Image (cartoon, rainbow, N blue to C red; front, top):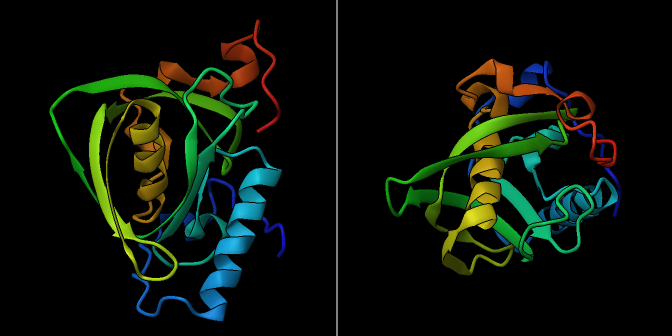
Length: 177
């Protein structure tokens, strides 16, 4: 296992569309997923997409469990989601603050669907099907955006709601992102 370097906004590799996984339960896939989980945890991330470490494959990992970057959100179990398909389960959208390991130290007010149905596969090729809402739905949408070359600032409606965490929230002491 290794902690990988996370690409930063401006790197053209973050704008590419990722390819689907065709072979499951391979040593290469296990190594990729292990490295992604270790990297996400080392950086206190809520999730990580393979393109963020320069790998153009449709793999995301996410987990929130007492995360100092998101202290007031519900727990989300560790999930490996491969070749995801997302579908909102309603029209309701909500704006909330997001950060990203590829855009350290910044936050933006991003609209996302409140309720979401997602499907895909785990590392062994077993189907995953879930209906989620709230922060869980937000994290899945954020991470899956990376698979299509979309970074959260591209979704911000008003760029006055985008800036450095320390300037936006001077009263909060968030860990470096």
